[in-house]
Image (spheres, rainbow, N blue to C red):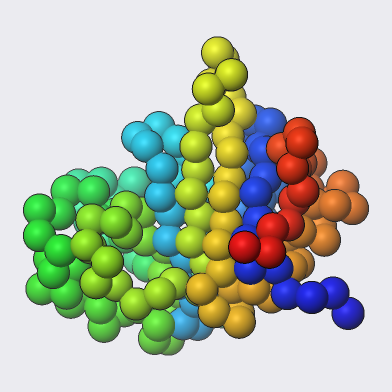
Length: 184
């Protein structure tokens, strides 16, 4: 049995690697699971969510909730709520809209731009930050930094670290010069 992984850093070679990571994440999601996605505009948060929904069996259109603030998806095993807090101007706006009632409940939640909640959200099971590497002129690669906030999140990271190390996630690797798993 492997020790739980609290943090993980991965290099995603391209959009298909982002989808591969999303597929691995899909195996972790279930009722009550909260995944937060951070990163600059264009870093791939919605692309990752699309891959996640596809891996969970959603075949319809996946829209970014940038303007609607929330999209819900009725999946075979649970509902998934996709939130985007980018346009919030106050840290309690997400509560005023009733989104707090959907976090940690019967559905899973993916929250883009959680930092716009001003630190008022409960700790997610898993926080994922996507970054564009400075050395990639084509802007196809991404760094993914994942941090577990709960035991469920640590179990998820352990499974992803094992899948990455075994080569089961196409295009996903550890950044050069660092280990895939960190014990910070």
